[in-house]
Amino acid sequence: MDVVPYAAHHRDGIAALCRDLGWPTYSDPAVVEQGCTAPGVSVCVACVDGEVIGFAQAMGDGVMQSFLSQLGVAPAHRRRGVARALVEEVFVATETSRMDLLTDEAQDFYRSFAHREKSGFRIYPG
View 1 (cartoon, rainbow, N blue to C red):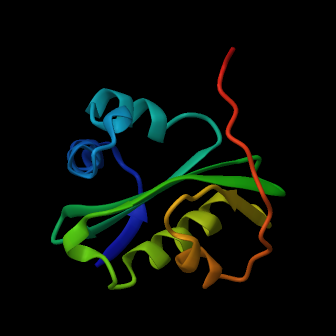
View 2 (cartoon, rainbow, N blue to C red):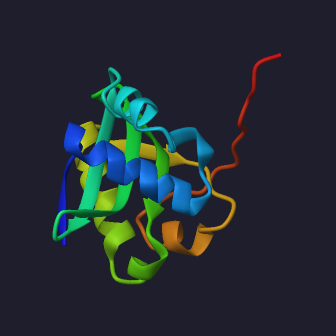
View 3 (cartoon, rainbow, N blue to C red):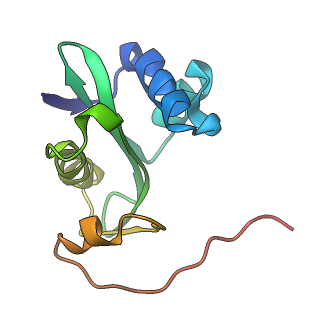
């Protein structure tokens, strides 16, 4: 497995993975390209033999604060260290000293990192 920074040739693979995971927001390759290349965004991609098997997207200020916004791994590749490698690499890529995230289902996974738990909110427009 290779974990590499996002490049345009990954967009179709990320879109396909998102469709497989039931994540409609990034199921369009054009949206993947926009979201993965936006200012302040860092994306790392896990590949096996050129096939995208996972990705992590984080946003940060490049100094102190970042936010892990997406982490997806193909079901066939879970429990093999892919997610951990992606989180570690995208955190380094943000060049920040801390990373926040929200999760509904993966508390035990994120507790395996050095962390401090805090409650959070997701705010939507009016």
